Length: 299
Image (cartoon, rainbow, N blue to C red; front, side):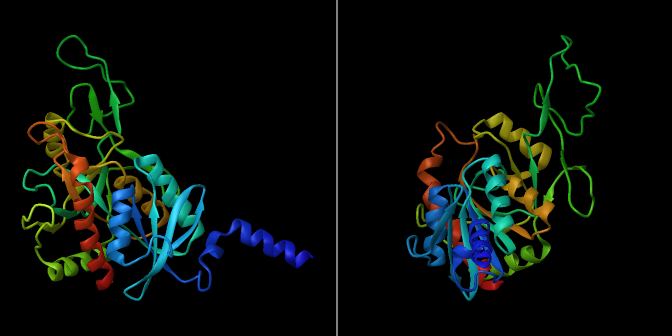
């Protein structure tokens, strides 16, 4: 009876058992934030959404299968940074993860990029980690003593860095950016050479697929032309989204290699008229998933 109680506890607290035989094998995790990204990823990786589904953990969906000889776990994290961080940490705590990848959409910040283009940044920053200050009545702002400006401001908004920690540092330290893994970036560069420029199935335009630069994330859906210019000026950002820096931050703290592939679904306010991001979610998600599949082949 004692042995049965121990087995029950292990099965209850260790969701690795959900995966069946071979669950302790190392896993490549592929993250998506919402349904269009998830469906594009499952399709491009050749995973059946019903047959590959695992039991949900705290409501978070998981899908598992073999892709190009690799054991892959696909996770829909939910949109925005708190959901992103929560779902990824839950995954790392319960599965033997060796690398974390992402495929999905973003808003374009770099004026050299257009809707549909694919970017794989080398680093990620928070654009919304900031202090908001009162005007001083003289054209400036009343800056609190604790705050030392590190970047130019956007009106009352003064960006700052986040405090991050790892087991190696043992303390929270000012952290400007979170890196993509150098080895995965090297794999991505080889994969991009192989996939080459390809036409969008949505528009027929030949898409750019580029590795490098900075991506930024925040808790807002950004659709403002002036703030877009500000973000490009301060971070020279290529794209902007609502999750990736949180993923990169969690991987940094856990010492897990990370890489994100983002295809532009909109121009984050740089367009003429209304933002039509929703019409581009599925085709842009497909562009990102196509590049991700080539990266997995190359790993």
